[in-house]
Structure formats: structure tokens, C-alpha cells
Length: 270
Image (cartoon, rainbow, N blue to C red; front, top):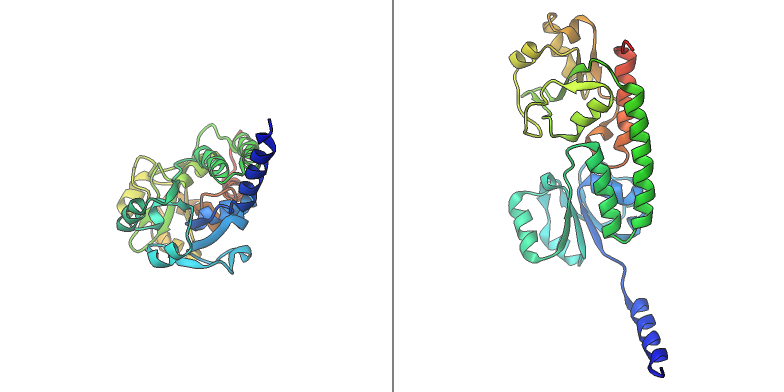
């Protein structure tokens, strides 16, 4: 029994000496998830891709999407890397694997899977309770959106990622599921590539009721094809929020804005 006070003191010293987990985010969506979990205090570096959230502006950069600075990354002595596979080239992903740094990799194919991965990240970084509460709130909001925007006959949508050349999204890309939440159907959902290249003829053949794109300029060329339902019904729409393409918790409200846009321009007959 006389050993007990000594053991307790030893454990207390060990706890005090333990350093916080050092996390590097290798995708903007992962950085957003850390903010949403109120765990940005664990971040020691980020991979850049677009404008950073204000809370992360002072953090060291480890490169840009597709151009990871391995030397800079290693200098930060990370305990955990949060990885979106497409943000780091395959050769560098192999290098990271050989270095033996713990890595959490996420590439959700639907919104439910995205929420599960947010919860898993929270557990991995020691914020399990916070992650569970946040995930439950996201699930509740998602359920409400699905009920609100359900359609007996889904709206046929062409989601244009880029126009020259013409790119869209395949069925296993998470935005396809966002469309489904809104009572819509990606006309290229049968394609398995995340961002397949298509041609005008294939769009004409599938004849969408709505065409979505990032800006008005990308939509302008479709007006040359008045036989398209989307053109005839004046449903060439600008995606309301770029957050739709970043799979973090904020995507739920970005999806809500998409649903509202589709409902306003193509009301469902219920």
C-alpha cells in the first residue's frame, strides 16, 4: 500500500509532461472539420487550397494542393496527418506511408459517410464527445432536409464542374448525394470516376431539366441548344455555394442552399 502514493505521483507527472497531439491537415475540408470540432488548437500546419479561414491564417503551410512540401511537413513533427487522397500526389502519399506517420484518410462518397468520418476524426484526436454531439446535429438537419425536399420524381440535373473541356461529377462523388437530398438526380450518376470528362452530345442525349455551374459564363454556351429542357425552361443555375464541394460539416447548410435554389426554380408537384 505504501507504493500507491508514489505510483499516483508518477502518473500525475506523466500526464503533465504529455504534449498535446500535433496534427497537420492535408486538405481544406479536413482543416474545416478541425475548426468545426473546436480542435484547431491541435493543428500545427495545413496544406493550402484557396482562402484560409481566419482562425488558421497564422499556421505554417506545408504546401499547396498537389504540391506537398515534405521537408516543411517533417519539421513540424506531426503525430497525425489528416489526408484527403486527392490533395496529395500518389508518390508523396507512398513517401508518407514509408515514414510511418499516423494518418487518417477520408474520401466520403455520400453525406452519411462524411458525417461518420467526422465522428471518427473526433475520436482519433481525443474529442469523441464533442464529435458525437456535432455528428448528431448534422444527422438531424440532414434528415429534415430529406423530408422537406423529397420528390416523387427526381429532378434530372447536370452538374458542370468545368466547361473547356467539359467535366462533371460521377455518382460516387459526395455532391451527387447532395443532389439526391434535394430531390434531384445527377444524370451522370452511372459514371464511377469522381470527375469524368463528358461531351455536349452526351448531355443532349440525357437532356437534363436543370444545369448547374460555378458561374454565369460557364452556362452561357448552353443557350445554343434550345432543345435542352434546362434551356427551354430557363433553368441554367449558378451553384449557390462553393462549400458544396468541400466535404466537411458546413456542406449540410451548403446543401440546404442548393435545395432552396432548385425548389425556387423547379417546384416539386407534391
